Length: 96
Image (cartoon, rainbow, N blue to C red):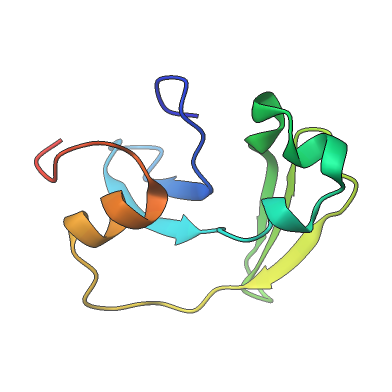
């Protein structure tokens, strides 16, 4: 959650430098949850995230979600900061 606003995106950060490496678009997963999860804004949080390096799969679940997802990542070259901000509904300017 960014400043109280939910986003269905995950930011990839270099743990050593703090550099943003990329973004992972998880839009659509929340809508697959049962109604009582979808209608509680605090449940929008993706909070169970693990990457399995050898299979290149990401495992994701969210707060009070009843499902976990196994995701294979597909790079999207050519996305701009404006694209990410719009897709992730961050409400930021590209310079931020």
